[in-house]
Length: 272
Image 1 (cartoon, rainbow, N blue to C red):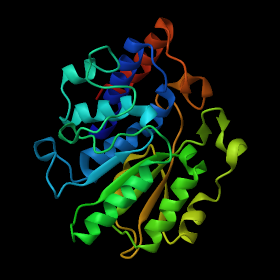
Image 2 (cartoon, rainbow, N blue to C red; image 1 turned 90 degrees about the vertical axis):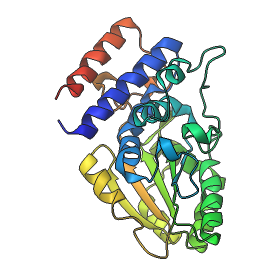
Image 3 (spheres, rainbow, N blue to C red; image 1 turned 135 degrees about the horizontal axis):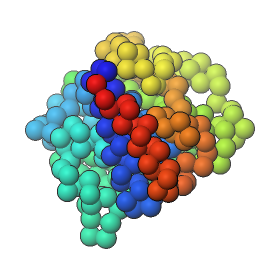
Image 4 (cartoon, helix red, strand yellow; image 1 turned 180 degrees about the horizontal axis):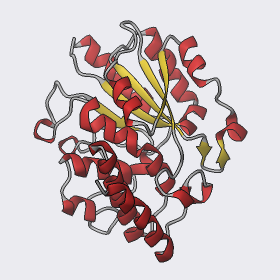
C-alpha cells in the first residue's frame, strides 16, 4: 500500500479516537476531506513545522472548521502538533476547541467555523501577498454547503477580477449538507462551469484518489492569470463502510460496537 494511503488510514484512526473520546460530532465531514488534506500537507503545499512562520510559506485556510479533527490529525502526522496537543482536543483546559483558533506556530492560519468566511479571508490574504510580490500561495478548503453563502460568491467574483493566480480553492464536494443532499437543499451543478463563468480555472477530480490529487496539485496554477479551483468529488464518511454517504454521521458519535467495527476497517487500510 502506498505511503499516502497508510497516512490517510492513520489519520482516520486518530479522528475516530478524538471524536469517541469527547463524544463529539462531525466524523462524516472529517472523513470526506482526509485524503485531500494528506495530499496538501505531504507534498502539495510548501509548509513545514520547522518554518511555520516563514513569510515564504504557503497559507492554508480550513474554512469547514466543524471538521477540525481532520485538520488536527493531519497537522499531528505532519509534525505541527504533539501527542499532548491531540489528547487535549475538546477538553476542559485542553489545547484545541471544536473549531480551529488561529495559532500560526501550530499550523493554524485562521480561526474558522463560521461558514462562508474562509474564502473571503483567503482571497484577501492572496491579494496582499500578490501586492507584496510574494511567491507564497493561499490554499482554502471549503465544504460544498458554503457555496450557499453569498459571501463565498462575492469572494469568487473578487478573486477572478483580480486574477489571483496565487489562490487555490478546494471544494470538498461530498454533496451532503447538514440536513440532506445538497441537490435538494440548493443545487450547485454545474459547479465547475459556474467557477469558469467567474474567471476561475477549474478542474474536477476524484477527491479520494491520491494519483489524481497529487497530479492536480503539481499543475498549479491551472492558468497564469486566474485563481484555481479543484472541485473534489468526495464521499461523506469515506473509509468506513457504514458511515459512507449517511447523514447520521454529520452529527452522531459511534458507540462502542460501531467504534470497534470502524477500527477493524481502518486497521485493514493501515497494513502494508
